[in-house]
Length: 471
Image 1 (cartoon, rainbow, N blue to C red):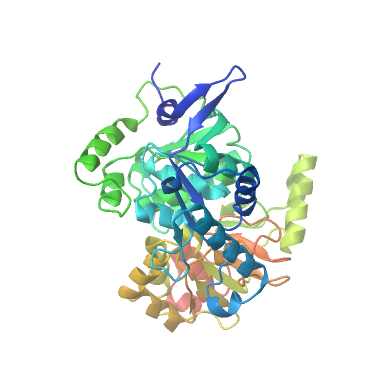
Image 2: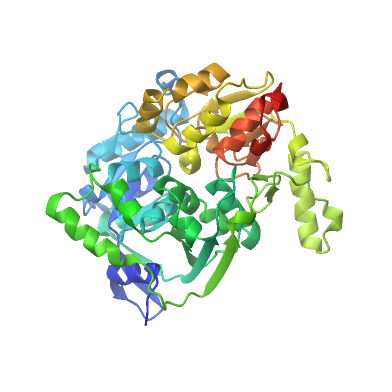
């Protein structure tokens, strides 16, 4: 039978099939960070086991690390304990560790591709749900729990159930002002936060082929917000150009042999998917979220929805709860919603292209007086490149804070978080209650849209941004 991309990679990694329909999969790569790994290391030590392939793992602290004053913030507290425990465990078990002050440091889902650790056709796991990011390279990549991390450490395998397949076709010409973040928010708005449950998603179509590798990573990154653990894009020449010469990518004859294999990873023309969704991106506008799930988002030209107009009782109650938490009034124009904070960064939108796009909007403007705004590069390499290009100076001149790499305000497990009642325009991936801090209110959007919000002091349509509009 003709195979999809997912089915091809899956078949190459099956070690053993079981009568209950599960399979034992070989795991090529494992990314390790400070939040999910302590229990896994403790389990290894208790059982007297060693790590089967230390070279197949890379560890880095990203969630708990401060981005403003790392030395001061890590003198004590939970963050210090988490990072110190990771350092001790990696030394004990011989796993490569990237320190916070290393030029290779960054968010695990940013540095994996930067280093060439992420490769097409691989099975890659990490104790973080946004591991689906790496599927942009044609890999099966998914998040795992602590016990599964321990299993990968000890055996380099995992027992998994094969997913159904879904193809999301994004077709058409992207309009001005519309970003790939708007693509994925539109997808989630269409199929819901549970629409991808049980499916491995492949993104395809003319609009996907036109995307850069960084944009494809953003697209796959938020597959989990649509309920899918796995989001993939077939590798092509853009993929190979991105990976060529990366420190951990194949080289020489091994590179040529690898590319020859990778070229065959595309879904076959007659492959059958269990579900297909088609979206014409030429009809899209910039999106912003107004509720407490990524599904609760709309074009920025919309108004806050009215729960009383929802015929379904369950959905009406959910909408009302969201609006109560977000302190929003039905019928309010989204562009009339005043904000307090702006966060540009995260594993979704902390790469160099994201910062370039945001800086292009910010250049020549100032952050609104009542707004506090930060830019957090996704890695030390991104920060260094941005500074070489002068992007830091643009942000600083406009009134942004310029930070070091880390997860930062995406997850409120570090020094960067919202206070009770604060409202944030954020380029992160989740707007759940308390995600960015207890009582904090999050509006998801693209980097240019977040930049526009910082300047205007409210949610704003970046397509209409001008000197007059913000004066």
